[in-house]
Image (cartoon, rainbow, N blue to C red; front, side, top):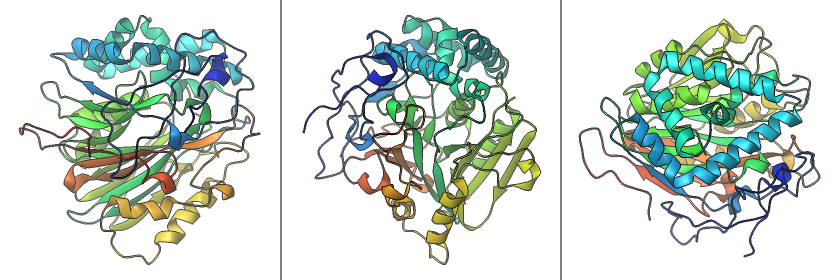
Length: 425
């Protein structure tokens, strides 16, 4: 198979490169798909047009193994593995902000405010983020373009088209809870994420999953059997400057030992942008909607689904669609219609058919149209399955239908046990 174009070339006018997969394990009988990363040192282009979108399922994957004696050394060790791609991803977000007419001054002010909020909420995580920036040859305010990208994007004109993002389904039952999601984002960022396996610092637990280059964490599972997935929401009062939601995810994976602890951690963060975090442990699936005016946590036995609009009345007032072309309610109806009346799933992999819609329909499984303009090229970049009773996260590039092509599996030993598995067959 041929190499694919640089996924960020449309942002920067760069050239394609090559990447060696490290640590991810394809499903049996499915060779790792070839792909190419962003060209990290390419010159910047207009960022307005770009090449045809990349097939996200064909992007090669990399696993970072992150460890250290303290927050600073762990941040430096992360940067040592991926500095060029960390810089490239931050520049890519700067180009995206420019597309949405967010000025560099606004970006820097908003990023600095979110970093200040992070330092007040979790000084150790701030120290680790700062070390990632230092090790990548960046100012920490430059890295905020990635770490606080959700908060900075609240400055975009809410009438501008935004990509639809993320559909989630969960099953709650004692000892058998499970969850799955599609992570949908701008197709140009198809190679700006990585798998990761993070070793705990004192007081933490090991965790694994995936993150965008430069973030400490995003979506995954920890060794206590607590996992988290994310859907963005939109509220008329969303604003920059709060604790980055991706820092909340990283903190949850590092510290929460039950879903209840995770919910309290989410509530303790001073967030200013809207999202729903679906937290799972072996017995629980709890969806926590965050708005600028508070949080609402809901959990129920059996099935649950979420897309990109508020569902819970405690925080729904002021909620607005992601854009004028949002199909969030249709996507949710598609998911709930598929599980209505269904019995218990055998595991999280059994949730994949609930998310595998016809890509031509533009609902849950997202493949961008080749002629879609920059800023509106939605793609399913990762399909996620979490089995908390097994402390297992399974992740695949691309839409759910292609999950069999290449799956990275992380199984973590409980805290206090040695020998947690790295991804492999």
